[in-house]
Length: 90
Image (cartoon, rainbow, N blue to C red; front, top):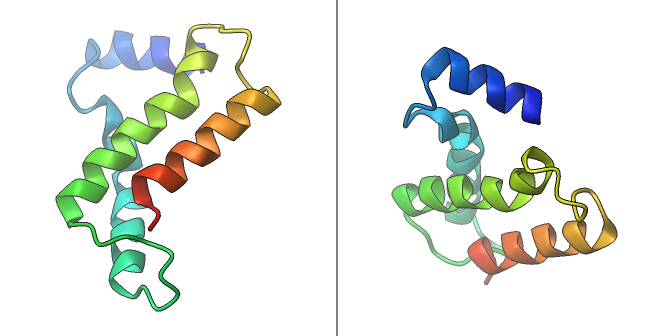
């Protein structure tokens, strides 16, 4: 993660487009929320899905980029999963 981040910073000078790589996942989550027959997703707009997905990626990747000891641990996985459910779940 640190290597990827350092390459992006050098290439883009940490542009505002850094988090755009996750947008297709946000769009997929939005589309699934529109087909929500199992009451799994709460109602969200496309813009909300995009912003929430970008926020979520920080929860998942920052500990790796910062060499935080929690990165990849069971506790980190639990935090990541629970955060995703809180952001998108019903």
